[in-house]
Length: 385
Image (cartoon, rainbow, N blue to C red; front, side):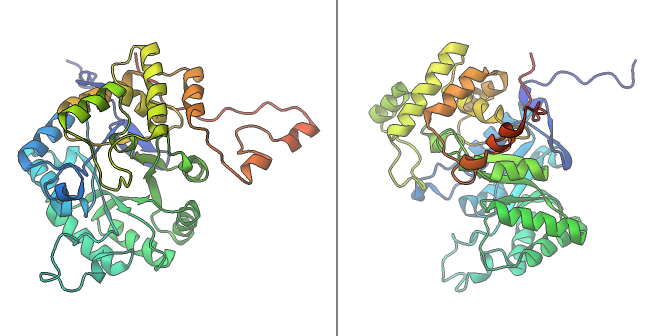
């Protein structure tokens, strides 16, 4: 018997793990399970919730399909997201198999009344104290001695880069955190923070999480080029436009049944606007061309095939939706289909890119001087046959 016999094939392509980033040797499933719906406290605010039994069922389905990458935060579902994930890992005995990302900076004691906690100012922001309190609470709720990826949830503009990066590095040095991530923060802050970390012998960020989907492409202006230059992974959230990537038939069904949709942070309600309907039609057209069963899987594949090291965060509450979205790992979009989807909602990078380009080709000034052959950029992983 061969001691190095190949491992058995995973149950789905979710079990074909990938290196997280050029600057990080961690290997993770190609799609993350977004855990903002795991927990039972946010239903009054227009967000779907899941009791413990339903949460465990979804986590089991993700794990059994080969998934190991979970994205949560201290604030999700007023702390019950972390609590349920921690209980599940303890019950299943699989903590070291999982890669758990959590965050600090939002006011995570929001769910506690002011009678319980009269002063909440230490539970919010980027400060060293907020970081200290949050990471210890997250370790307790997750029932673990370490956090795989610890994010700055947003940049609050009150702390110095040195305070934040020194504090984060100390957590890594203590073994409480393994890798650092940053979310919803300007590219210039991340670049400056990573430069400080390298120059001062501290730990840099290896992953960026931000809003990116076929209708919202602002990350392509500065943030994604920054990630490529910094050797960072890209973790898009809201990849399905808060559930508004849906067919006309699905929207009609929801209207008739009264099911509705998510309204948290959706200031125009759960129904699709004109742009979202247009995008859904375009995705439906491509899905028909390639024989895909789900337009949401096409929307996920579109992001994964634009750039390397993209790990979409896909949430939801239903196991069948999770399995439907895994179809994205089987989809290979042609250059023509990618361009068609790009053109559905035109994106203007603005100045200075419109003047001198974005580096994807030699600009007009170079071309006026001569002819060049440009080395190709690194490509995304294409689906395995």
